[in-house]
Image (cartoon, rainbow, N blue to C red):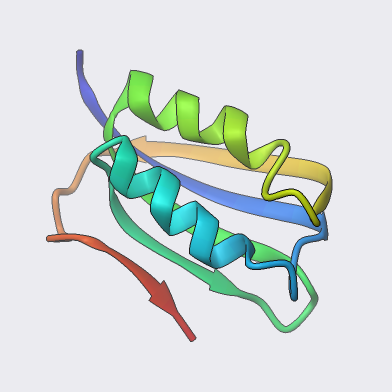
Length: 92
């Protein structure tokens, strides 16, 4: 399966509900690298790198999020794999 990169923006009630923490857990469970962060406008943004099938599984999870989240929209921009990350971080 080919390696790919996805930048994701998640909208809804996604801050203050541990979305970043759980996103990191899901990314690590699927052996993805990249980062996740809160944006000033209330959205969460994430960048995933790894196998396309694994990213798609994490994207499915992002459409639901953790129990307290209320996801209204998930936008995905697909890009070429760059391999620039060693792990998956929560950014501030």
